[in-house]
Image (cartoon, rainbow, N blue to C red; front, side, top):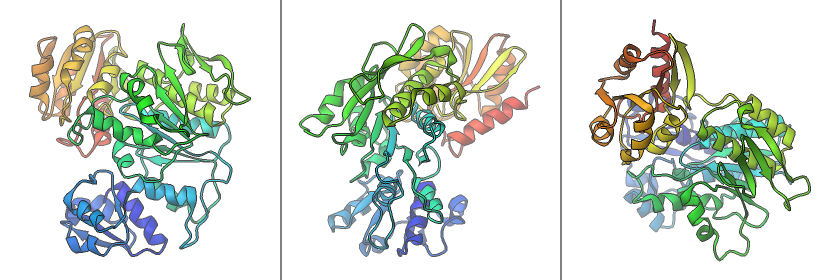
Length: 466
């Protein structure tokens, strides 16, 4: 009964359905959401009684609930449809309903859904893409894994149901597991690196979940992939094999000249020759004119640019957006400079690959605060960037011993009992020109409500330094 569950329940209640929300947590643990639930919705908390599911016509899962749990499997075996909140939003927004009658929210003949998934960078890519579309004058809805549930956004539009041109959505592997008809007009996979291995057997299973974003795309649809990412480059032909109606594939790359968007000699170029009358091969923007910085943000900027151009944005709107977009909170976010030391909040760096790219955004002299709840990450992959760039490693949370064993021989390493003490240690040891970086490479749930809570606490502590 978090964001997705509350959004789905409220939208269904508004449409006249008899809705039950069930959660293993007690009401006192769900106070942040219980008060936001439509009063017509019945709450069954503290467990998942079989009888709640037995009489259902439809079961809508929140992303955090695996479809393989026994209660859900038993219901599915009885023929009860099981979908996710993303699928529910897609059905209502893209298709409309016959009973009760609702018109599609997306304008007829427009672009439909633009969807972004991937391990890292998907929130920034999605937000930048939406910024580009709005800059071009398109009417859009932004939602999904990036913040508000799409069902909440759709519900908010029902009182003023003017159609939109595009729905721009960040979608997670968890959400994609429970899709049945979801079919974005333009989709992107930013990258696939090891993550959520506490839920998936291996990276291959995780990658297959991500690849569901293009499973129902067809001729006329577009798939944008990271050419530099070995998993997507290795598997995309397999994902699309045997299909006469496969989507058209474009790439983005920091290293190669590709059909799509690529970087070369300090500039970003687009190459869409042969696809649509207004596309060509031209320089898009100088890299140093892109407002968001860091190697990972260059990739995000290229992914968003490719999607926007393929969805009908003009080059001038994309170029202007790249020069104006300031980035998202908790993603390599500059907090302040104090006594010549810069502090950055990268609390969204919840896995090893994200932390690697954040550290690699600085040439040297990084004091890195890391640690939290391990998601079965391979911390040894951080060894080279830590060896080259990190002068002090301050570890917190449940994973700190594991991280010390993997990295502690490379640089000075110490433990801190909480985030405040970690910042204080960095304040004591940092010198002018150094960077203090929170990029945990771990989930936040051992010490914080979520990565946003962790990032806000870090910023409050840093801003309180004297």
